[in-house]
Length: 454
Image 1: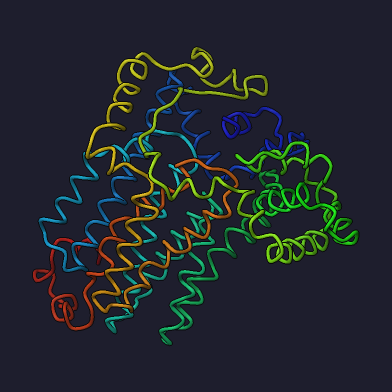
Image 2: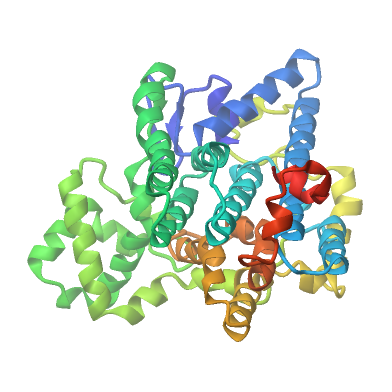
């Protein structure tokens, strides 16, 4: 809603700090690329006389791209692993019939728009690892693809760069194709975080996202330490901390469920040097108060325990009415449900949340914890430690989950959509197993999956 309101021409503001942004068209607090995409479909709907039709078209295209990404990852697993065709078909029908995949594609938000492009990046990353391990050439096309999809994913969700960049850098340990690997690792963050903001933001009047977004978790944890052990913090450290955020305000608004309240106490006047000094203090305090740090962010465990599922439904539109939300689908009441949602989708979601096997196959922890752990164990049991590199994106997704400032299942969609590679990891073919067939120049000898990938 914030993105649609701002791209529609209402005054821009920082939705976290609740401060106006005079002279700007919109804020990059939410990815500007998504804002332009959503705004384009909104304008299309208005142009044809039915605003809702624009959003319906957006959802259909989003679902189509999501289906392509899931089809591609299943084709890749079929072509590059020893998993039986019967198991591949089971995997396909799980994607087809369990609405954990499809339900999120009907939601207009950055996570849903982002995840298909990130899934395609996972496939390209896996293909490059496969080719390195099997001493096959990494052609320029693959390098272009991994840079392109890492960049698109980074523009749609900046935290994905903390997954794509280090995962690709790990390929340096193979001691080959250094230039290609360095380009694949460095170019996406340079383009997404430096070049585009420097060149396009001034031209398009886009305000950069607030600096508090990147240090929300440290503020949350340090505030918890101050609440419990303020007398044990040195005056010098306390003075530096207070330059970055208002300690007194943070202690009053701190809650364990989310870091948003303490982020709002961030002082925009703080310098980069002061923020760096604060982060050094944050690291030092971890070794003194690790228990308090864990208690400060209890929500990080939620993504890894059995409970929530990926089945979702919600109101047609909700929030920010006074800021301009009233102008988005004006005939739809704010935070209201459609007839279909009330009588079909909500009862359906309630039923499958309790109905095996859907309740299990849709459970978040299956994809964030159990499948990765089982895959890791099978790699060790099958003596395929070299295959663990295929789990690198999953490992970095876990680390990113620890930095996320709140808990919602949408934050872990990358685990869900990338699950096929995690399952296949212990069974991916090694050198010689597929060498002759995979490198055959004649297309007639390739499997359909091989032809798609090439």
